[in-house]
Amino acid sequence: RRPAVYDTVYEDLMVSPGGQLVDYDAPIYGTRESVEQIAPARVSYEVVPAVSRTVYHTVKVDDGGYAWEWRIIHGRKVLCKVWRKARYARVAETVVIEPERVRRVVLPAEYESVAREVLVRPERRRITEIAPSYQRVARRVLVREGSTHWRRVHIERHCRD
Image 1 (cartoon, rainbow, N blue to C red):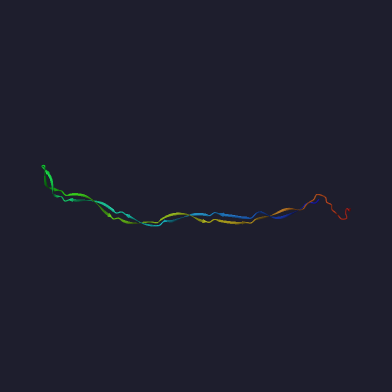
Image 2 (cartoon, rainbow, N blue to C red; image 1 turned 180 degrees about the vertical axis):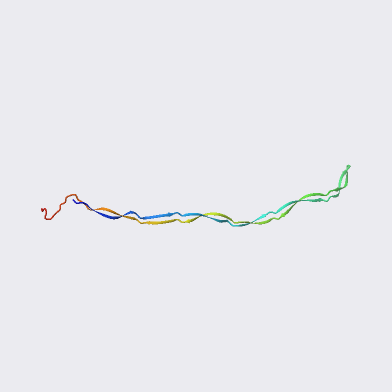
């Protein structure tokens, strides 16, 4: 009968495999406002119509005085000398106060506030290499098996056959 013989063997075992750790920072965007010209300055010309007014005058149409006219008196036609008053009439006259003219009109440039998206910080990727980690592990290993049966052993000068 013989006991089994064991030995302790030390091995390096991989506890965790290596790899890469990727740290990602998203890009940051912001807005920037600026005033931009959307239309340039323009010059145009417009016609200003004439300014006129209606003025009324009293005008002598007929001087008046003596005139001859036929009249019927006692059934007879008679030529008579008759006094006539002067005759007047109202006459309308359009008077130009300001003549027609061309006016220069300057339209200023048009500006507008515009918000644009701008990149404040670009995306960042940091790759960290992680080495594999090992650990020293002790393990009992069977060197020689033990036996529980009898074996024949030859001893010199003993039990001769």
